[in-house]
Image (cartoon, rainbow, N blue to C red; front, side):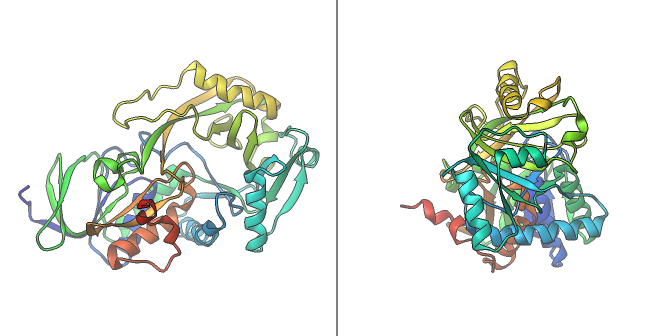
Length: 381
């Protein structure tokens, strides 16, 4: 790959949720940064879209996420203040499930271990306070008042504009074809428009990450997801002021949802929707009746006032690691390349701090953030 002569400190491949934040944090440190995005900014082809994305301080996945989510909240607030964009909204959050289930028990444990304000509610108490809910008898719910949602498209645009304001070069509609290490310890990146050299590189390409490195083979697997928006009978019941975001474990599976915002409908999704592993360049991006029925049935069972006409259906992708925890590291054979991958459907809320972490890894080779549980070598055994 002959070089065009364009050389940067860092090239970021992918300018979605994670890549846009990374590009900003690198540029804000005074580094010469190039962000390359295959599609539009923002776009609907990957994982960083969907109008609203849950953010919550109560974290049942693992208490180790709590320091990162605390920093993420601060950075989202900073981005909102600096750009004037409403990227974060606080509605409260509900994590509910039967006695002994990890959704409730894990959220409770994280709040207790980290002194996070919370309340434990019965199903009846949830329904009394938030009439849109009709949870099963015997379920317990953890309510945390700081939960809410991030607006992904606004967040990406905000990070890109902030990055450009401090000198970043961001290019959309430019597909990376390949990259290679250079003899001087840097990288060379070839796109369908040119070739660029850099000292360091960040892989933040979401579902496409494993196409750029064998180190992620089998460790960052794309999965087809579908989201549904249904019109409530009384929309005011499901507005952000009256309806917390939620995670729920029921016999039908593990589901999540959000209030009405920018689409005239209550939003619902299922974790690992229909367990469809896909190639991000070749899968069914059009939702179908089976997808709709799966989401509508659970809406009717537990949020019956929201089970009106369909307003919108949309596909996106999870990219799952084997243990469903993030992958944040440098590549073992190419330490000049940092990678953020395997966000497993629960990563976007962390995008602001993930950008800071990936900027640390690219610029310094390490980070002060607690990321040991996210290192690549955990899969070596």
